[in-house]
Amino acid sequence: MVSPTIIVHGGAGDWPKSKQAAGLSGVREAATRGFRLLQQGKSSIKAVEAAVIEMEDNPVFNAGSGSTLNLVGDVEADAGIMDGKTRRGAGVALVRRTKNPISLARLVMEKTDHALLAGKSAERLGEAFGLPKANLKLPERVYQWKQAKRRMEKGVLGDFPRNLKLIRSKGQSILGDTVGALAIDQNGDLAGADSTGGVSLKLPGRIGDSPILGAGLYADNRIGAATATGVGEIAMRLVVSKSTCDAMRSLTAQQAASQTVNMVTKMAGRGLGIVTLDRKGRYGVAHNTPHLCWAGVTKNRGLVSQLHR
Ligand code: GLY
Image 1 (cartoon, rainbow, N blue to C red):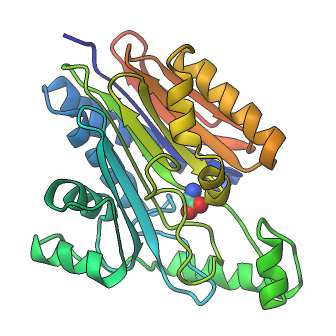
Image 2: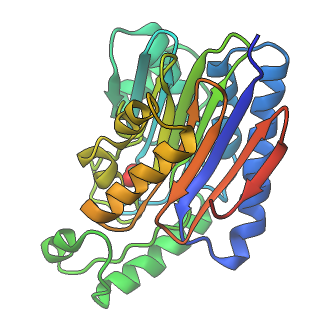
């Protein structure tokens, strides 16, 4: 029997002082919830879904209720989930009204033949299975959106300079980005899950890395699991989660995470974080952003949470 482990994160980025305590408490609660399930003998899929639901329901995180808004002030959330035993996985994108996008991703993985569903059609699948609906657009995010739009109108450059030219002004703040969770259960089965509102002021219709297997997340019992956070375009172009898992064939979880972030810094610049879990239950954390809010639970080390690696 394998000793269960979970690691969750609440996003890479620049966590303002006013939100740091709430962010850390949120990841601790999510990790504890997932770990409790693992201790009860539940599967790693159940544990990562439960941990991500906890964060989707916590408005301090940019996922589910509390998702950041796109350029026209709408929520378009993405989520992904992957089972390392079967290497089946799926993502959902452009979700507006399903309370927990991660559960919708699990439905796509378990009930359909597809690996990615988007928009209203994805939401209709959730409705058919009775998933709860909710208004994911919270007043605090509307306030932040108005502030970001004001910065944009002043021409403050963000991570999307070409969008800036396209729409003549652009502001971009990553206030705690994606949430994610990786777990290994008593059977040694690995799983990964992630969920996000995406990057603020993104163009309507933009889909990030989170629902894309290999980019936002990957899990394979034979090597390990990884999930990324930060600017999704970087994670997609460099296929960071799959390549980090491949690196775990010869490196530990921490070595693989650090190697990926060093490679990203050289090839694409700053704006990425990654958490990893290898098949021995060792986790790793690396980021080239000011913070990455995370928590891990193992039998030996207990609960650990930090804003840095
Ligand atoms: N990493 C989240 C996104 O770029 O959408």
